[in-house]
Length: 150
Image (cartoon, rainbow, N blue to C red; front, side, top):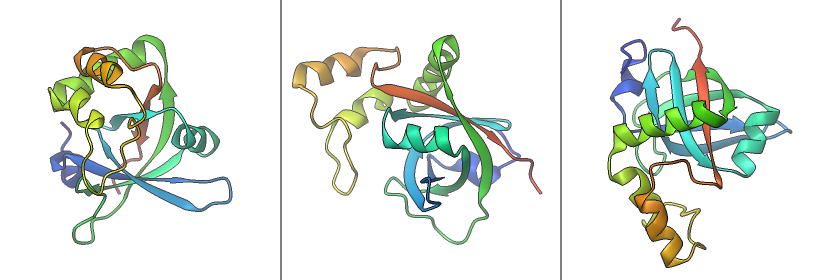
């Protein structure tokens, strides 16, 4: 983990702020892995990946699992890019290493107050995904190159 961004490095979750084409901010809590000045996270392919492709500038804050930011930490800014192929699989393994068994299990269960984007999957597909170590077919890995600390 990096000590360049100590508050973010200590956090288990980050609040990701991306922007729609009209400039409206959209905040989403994410699990992530931070190494030096590079952060990676997994997301379902859809609105967030389209937003990031259209407008890669993002802001991040340490937060809790519901996206609540405590105190008034400074935003960490950066540029996002969607990874593919071996780069995506390598980042997915790094994320799995950080979160352990929870990495594939938690997204499959209902948690009050948290949006479950995989709720429509069948039970057998959810079970299969909890056991796999590869990137899910409807998911993407995003890399954020963080701006230098000021």
